[in-house]
Image (tube, rainbow, N blue to C red; front, side, top):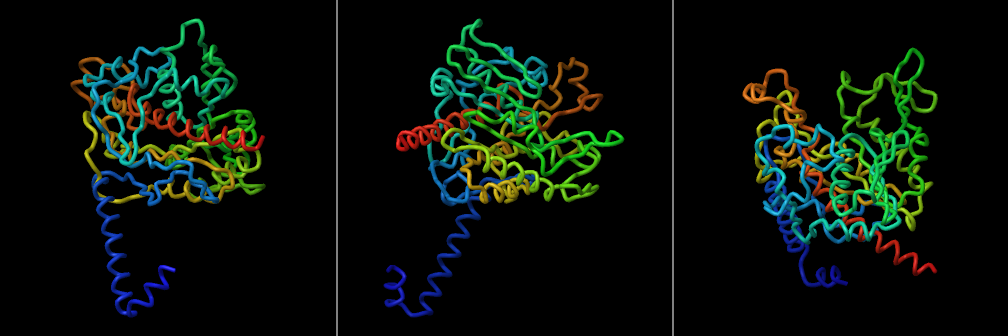
Amino acid sequence: MLSHTFSSMATPKKIHLVFCLLLCSTFLSFFHCALSLLDPGDEVGILVQADNVNMVQSNRDSRMRCDFSVGKWVYDDSYPLYDSNCPYLSSAVTCQKNGRPDSDYEKWRWKPSDCTMPRFDALRFLGRMRRKRIMLVGDSIMRNQWESLVCLVQGVIPTGRKRVTYNGPAMAFHAMDFETSIEFFWAPLLVELKKGSENKRILHLDLIEENARYWRGVNILVFDSAHWWTHSDQTSSWDYYMEGNNLIRNMNAMVAYQKGLNTWARWVDQNLDPRRTQVIFRSMPSRHNRENGWKCYNQKQPLPFFSHLHVPEPLAVLQGVLKRMRFPVYLQNITTMTGLRKDGHPSVYRRVINQDERQKPGKGLSPDCSHWCLPGVPDIWNEMLKQVSSVILKQIEKGSKEDE
């Protein structure tokens, strides 16, 4: 009706002129937004979603009306929410204990542009997750996030009412009074990596059940997988790819990543029920590994903005796979927000260093610009996770009641 009325009131030339002006205005607005979020020195990217919906799926179900990925870092002296004495932290991420002299990196919280993200409330979170299993599946950076989540909740649980158990590639923190488990499952590639003849390492792009059998019966599944796929040939964890009966020596990394994700997506579509399980896929956090790994050394403040637009290829591949799925998967996009946080990595403080090493940082030290100090940036991912999972659980419970 609107287009018909407009056509009857304007000449074709006027219509063309108005259309061009609207198109230019839209482009300039987008370009201005992108420029305000990017920095020339970094190959990090930003995903700007026009509809403010992070639920990426074929049927466009939009349960989430806020795009948490767009916002800014705000200094907040009330942070962190726990300290580095949390007993569940790996020594490689306890940067304060390892001698890092500054601590402001612990005091930044993320403020979304179009909504609020409440401070993490451990008792409320545990109450919401009562009698539920939460499993974080992925690589060592997902382990980073698991340690953060456990430290966020463990302080409100009496000593005798919490424990950690181990089962093969899985480990679980149990909040016994809430009958809640927060689990981590080691599967950095999601698909299966096996030893073949002559001890060759073979990455099976179409096999996943060996890992996926552990995922059944979980209420909230959080996945990540990208870092290992982007390793160079010298540091990759496999010698060959295998698809069906075909053994493949060389393949484009992003083609292989897409094939692996497609195998994961098929398994989720065929084996999980969205009325009983919610699935979240966390995007790849930014690494600051250029300049021989010293890009994050001695960084003490977040970057204020970026100044060029670049969507990382793994994120584009992931989006494409999720959009073709039947199962509703929430894409937790942390790529942009982490790109601003060069200051959040352990750098040389991945272990305890002495005064002499501190004064001569290039000597015998290997900086870590991939993982994150704790307390720190992953705590914010979990504040986001708490908000997202709570909203989706309400939708699941509402749907279950309507089905009764």
